[in-house]
Amino acid sequence: MNRKADLPSLKDPRPLHHNNQAALALTVVSSGSAQAAVPTVFRGCSTTGASGGYDANNYYGPDATISLNINLSDTSADGHHVRVRFLSRNVHGTVKYWTWRSNLDGAGTTKNWSTTASDSYGLFDIGVQVARFEGNTLLNSCTDW
Image (cartoon, rainbow, N blue to C red; front, side, top):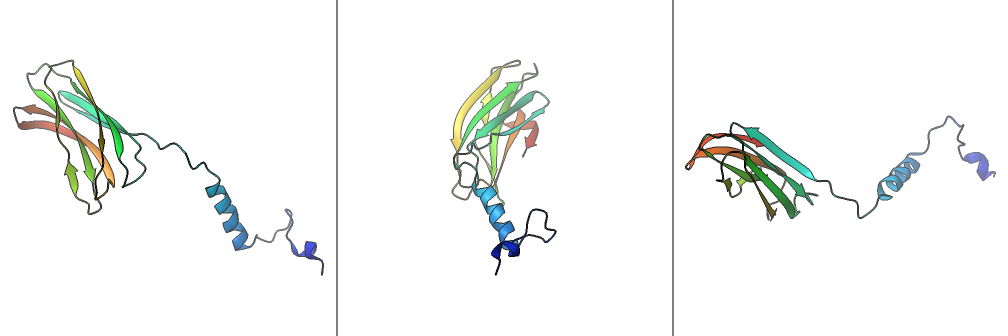
């Protein structure tokens, strides 16, 4: 029996056997680096009088502990202060509203914070809310998921 004659050539119109295709796909998928960089996630928005957001590093999935670099700018000389907060959605679809961070320094100023976030119920989606306040009354806001 001529084993070489049984193998398809590159010019052979017969399709490759399904298992050969799966092996090829597995080789391609598994050939990537195990230390591949995790992309940075950006969230941000602007509303009347305020602009802010964050970049999240190490967000590889729901069980991640992510590093957040948060920024918040007061963009209007209106006597109101501005706030920003991190948002997350867990495995049950429940939104968690994290602690507000405030900029009380007035128009034209920006504040920055660095922190981490994780949730035992998972970070299945992450977002940001930016708002303008009068005292503890929210006047207007925006959200970015």
